[in-house]
Length: 207
Length: 280
Ligand SMILES: C[S@@+](CC[C@H](N)C(=O)[O-])C[C@H]1O[C@@H](n2cnc3c(N)ncnc32)[C@H](O)[C@@H]1O
Image (tube, rainbow over all chains, first blue to last red; front, side, top):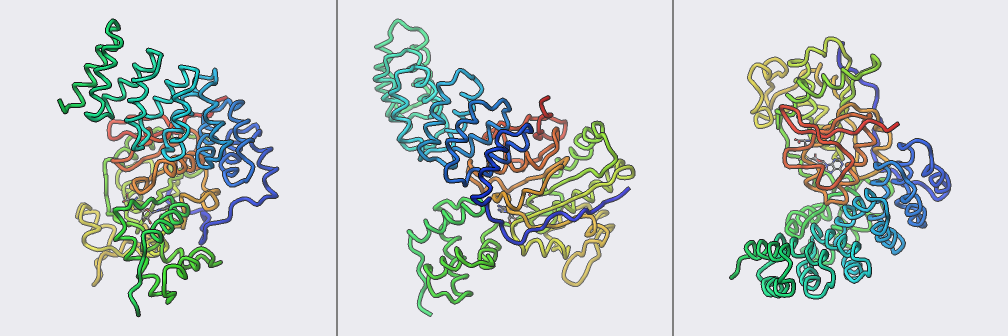
């Protein structure tokens, strides 16, 4: 046996994206039986002017994780209001994997997330606020530390504060020292906060 | 000719455009590298200033200038037997796994993208011939692709410098190359073993027909991408693979940081990624 060649396709130029006419077909393909077809449809829909709604709708019904991941990427690339609202809605989903996948996708979007993060950190649902803190974990954005500080200064929920304290230990600077001391006082009787704040303080340095 | 100036606003415009076309992200620290090449192309095309040049770049139907520019903007560093442990992994662990699941007698398909000037796909071919007994039993198809048409021409020509071959064992150099006045010419058999094609991994149009691969090598490209483009590339490769097919990345690259599509497979020689089996 040996090496063989089966004439792979060689394109000299990048090819155009699907034309408007094809969008209807893509919508059908987004609901095809085969996950391969659904993934390709989601990828192609990135350039379709009104695709965000369609993609968000599919996301919540989609049973295959690989298709969900592709839809989430498409929404993050699009980044329009409907796409962003759709991503945020995932944080309220009962579907645990979808929630986590959406958090991962949002971490990739520092500029687009900035205005939304503030809103999420003020969300009435503490779970959503915890997810928002999780997103901050790898959001490379200059304001991450100040957002975290404002969480530990103002958030009424212990678990949200605890998540933010942990993260401050990783991404904070000496500017977080005072707020960390204050939260230790505020939750003087909660051993976990005492412990987490101590760990964070010891990592920050700058004493 | 008057001095050609690239302003910060020009740089930003170009950076965004080039990123959308290729997935390649130039940090502001690469400004000098980029400006120098832009000026070079503005002079070569006699477009006089950035504005005219940028218009050509965007609206030229043939895409020729975009290709010329891409060719000089890419970093093509590569050499034979680079990160050799992965080739060991290919012959000792990955291919045995592929073969054990193979339900037909069709060829085993390998895609090496990016190829750069061909050292990597030719190394794979040599490794199979030298270190994999299965080559006597199976047909293998190796396709290797790059966005840069100049390196593809070099790859097809197969003429290499001393530096390119410096990590090759002497025995293999003697066996598969002929010394010529200006370098080392790889044998016709190896040149026939690899099919080189132009592909832009950030463009769905060019990758659409790349499917059913058992193994994909995608080494030392994702380092030039940002996380969103990396996610896109991970998806493209996923669709190019058969279920349970494998991906090898460069040693400093990790799929898990930006994509959860793949399972990690730890073999003795290397850690690689695997597309999960199709769910029933
Ligand atoms: C540093 S070389 C890596 C070559 C080889 N895989 C290795 O590891 O030695 C990177 C190559 O990626 C190619 N490249 C950059 N952007 C690309 C894209 N969007 N699609 C395909 N190839 C691309 C460049 O032209 C360059 O040849």
